[in-house]
Length: 89
Image (cartoon, rainbow, N blue to C red):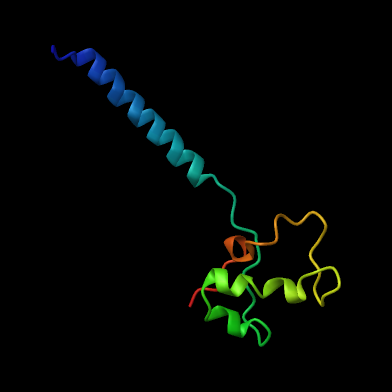
């Protein structure tokens, strides 16, 4: 198998261009705007639970008849803490 210097150089340049483009894309990403899980008396107990365990309780209050219903356009309701992250400890 013969080593092709030109082909290798093209792959290296292509790799650098793709990595540079990806870096620029990520640096220009918008800020996170989704509200975090509140740190208050109502939500305090959920900060200590595992994400999937805590999500089981969200719909008790966040349903159409609950104290804080979700908007109609809200995405799937079964993975709340995927977007609404817990506050940093």
